[in-house]
Image 1 (tube, rainbow, N blue to C red):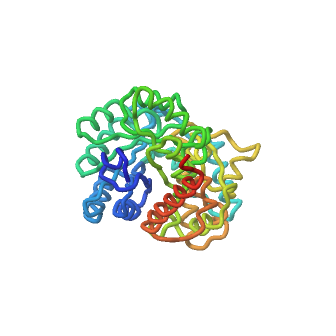
Image 2 (tube, rainbow, N blue to C red; image 1 turned 180 degrees about the vertical axis):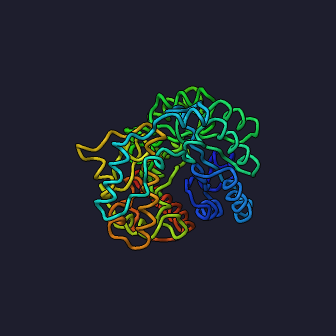
Image 3 (spheres, rainbow, N blue to C red; image 1 turned 60 degrees about the vertical axis):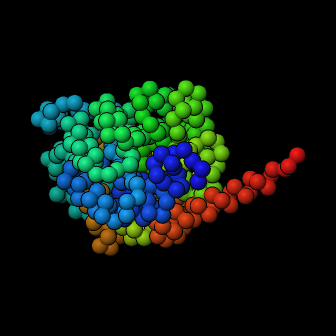
Length: 381
């Protein structure tokens, strides 16, 4: 493809695949796109193991790493000891979570207040000192892209990326956020519309992408990737016709054969419609989109407690969600009703279980078909 971004990154097709699964990352990169490994929940040691595995299987093709270093959250900048002094999870919240599980015939006696108060890998990694350790590991490998998913990357992250001559990307949900990122010095912007799975804003992709492109190209000339509900090549082509340099995708890889998602979740995703997702703060303390389930329904009830700030809400819910997922995989009916996963509204078009490579090729073919459709409207006059 005739693309400055593709030439800069050494890829054939500007399709970026965010995934927590190293197999997906490898297969997408080998097929001509760029796999990007999400590493927010990993320790530095685990990250090194994952990237070493990718290095040994990706055949030299470029790949990226996505960290989550929020610009702000409760306890950011404090020492571990100081963070532990904060009463992060009130009894009202821990009792509410236990009640949800017990209503679905799950023993929640092990989910004590003390356990809910414990630290999480996500919370620790979001601290600047831990983020620096993760960056040290990432840059010790031949990555071609580093990305930050929440807010403007800390200055040390931007400076390090420039020093290593690795492009740094950042996800944004508004024009104002895009301008802040551009001024801070990021190299690639990912305009994530409200249709996106995981953390997202409230502006649709169709509006957000051209708004950011028009604002950014005037002064900064930074490539903008479109994200949010994109699961087909024709959607990718539509966004690129609005000025995007490519597509950043996540949800579409969740139903692939290589994905990290369990069979229970895959089955739910394959039958879900575009109306079967919800955007809520109840999972992490910031708005994120996930699959509707009995779990998400409970948090929408009038008597449900207000979600805690990040990262405390994440610690509260993920400890319970790990228990739910384990039981769901073993066939527990109540746990299967509660099980959920982050996914965008494009889930309604994710109706088959295929390999990651075949998804890339399907994107390419669909992209070309979209081009042909547009050409039919053109005349020689």
